[in-house]
Length: 122
Image (cartoon, rainbow, N blue to C red; front, side, top):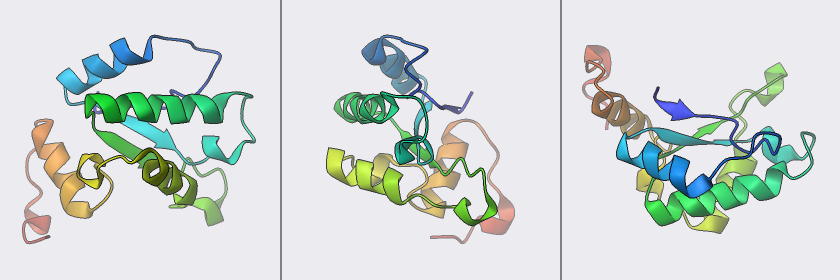
């Protein structure tokens, strides 16, 4: 498992610190889901996402972002996830989707073979 997603759903409560600490130990990224941050989801999801992000920051866990697009024009839309990351003050070096190179480095950290075609990517 490379990432934990949809953690903002308030219908599935868990100990944020314990789960994120375990994720950190095993280099598993925590997803910040842009679609959830639109507020059309379950009540309480936005506040939970911010709290999860604060805990992830305090533990220096890896973060990933996802648009969770349910419509073609939303693919790659990460403005709300980016805003959350900025507001919480998460180090961009911990956001595996910040650059293509960071994503590829994370995949290698997780045991994936380097992708030869992307070897020269900065």
